[in-house]
View 1 (cartoon, rainbow, N blue to C red):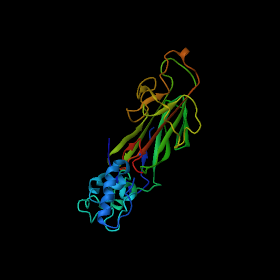
View 2: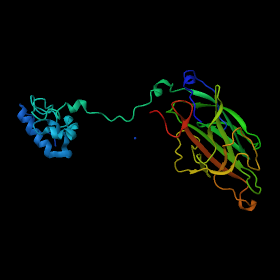
View 3: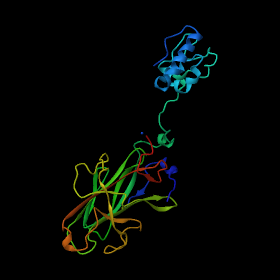
View 4: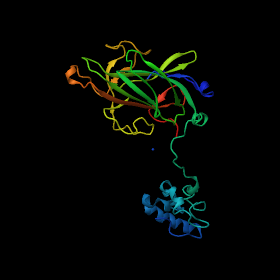
Length: 295
């Protein structure tokens, strides 16, 4: 679902619900001298493209590669030099490449990047639970715990809304006893309240989360590199037994660090799972992305 919060972005905070890239020869004093510079630049080709732009009779053909050469070989003659304005055939090529050549600065940023405050945050709520228990972190800070898998807990949090600012939800889930079938997992949802549009899900627990079986220093931090972590394993749908319906959305999955063995004898009583999800708000403020939307 996609919708626009642009009117709301002008008045932060807004309410959210979180339910878990060889130069020219030498200077010439006449147009003729500039022409010889062009000949030399022409033979230099792409390797020395600068001299091609040094203008002169044959400098025009080098213009394509010699454009940038205006900066290197290009200040050729005082009157017939790299600008090539006095050259009979090199004039077009001799346009002042040193100053007019385009500079690659990457794609233009969305205008909204300049209008959304860099420090803007939004009020959010985390709705999450785990079997048997969990501790939740948002952007590196512990925000709450729960040990009641049958009922999701809601925790107030703040999220960065500028598209260049990353948000990270990190959850440590702990299983404390074993039984047959599904006996451990984490489930949560992130929803947003929109005026006149009800509630829409932004982030749900699923295989888009990263997971680790072991504790790694700094794993809750926004700057932590989770690129080597595995994808979380979806072990059950929301509503599946033994848990039933716990959240307000049906799209969330129970996740863990791997498939759950069926037999009690094949699983440890005490087991931890570390999962995290990084995301950015998009420029509309109404959706999320895995990559920053602003430089």
